[in-house]
Amino acid sequence: MRPIHTILCTAALLFAGCADSTGQTQKEMHPTTETMSQYDHSKNPHYSHSDTTKLDLPLTEWKKLLPEDLYYVAFEKGTERAFTGAYWDFEGVGTYACASCGNVLFQADAKFSSSCGWPSFYQPERKNSVLYHEDGTFGMVRTEVTCGRCGAHLGHVFDDGPPPTGQRYCINSVSLEFLGTK
Image 1 (cartoon, rainbow, N blue to C red):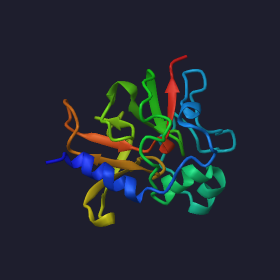
Image 2: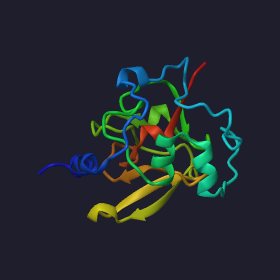
Image 3: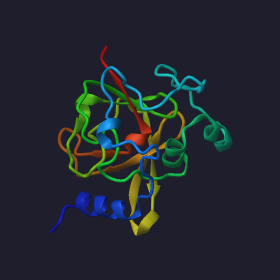
Image 4: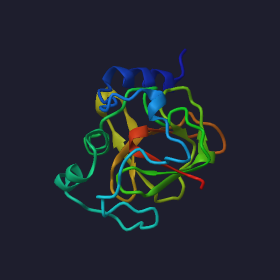
């Protein structure tokens, strides 16, 4: 019998419709500790790594502030195709934050290789960095994970991860920013 995460990842591949809209190859998209960011946040006044105040912006505002691929995943609950995101196999030392608002989500030392094609973590940075919602789309019952600050869709959490938590936070690379060490 195939593990449930393999089945879910295969199902997600069938339904995923968001690919890299810039035409960049996976290798070109891989961030380094020098570049650290997938996006230009200079025009997003809400982007912060230290402010944890909840944001309640209308979708029209997010649509103006975010690149099309990020908006699609974050606020239309899209999914990037497996094995295409900048961070699915990235191994930098640092922190991962929400690409929409900058909220710190995961530490790199909580990241592990799950071979499903998306970045996987076994625990969030802090209790309120992510929120959980029941998701019954595609005929499955899953737990959606959203940013605890802005509500952006990040991915899903499953109970098939490694110790110490046994959880696997399967997160879209598009929804993440890597904050490396300087």
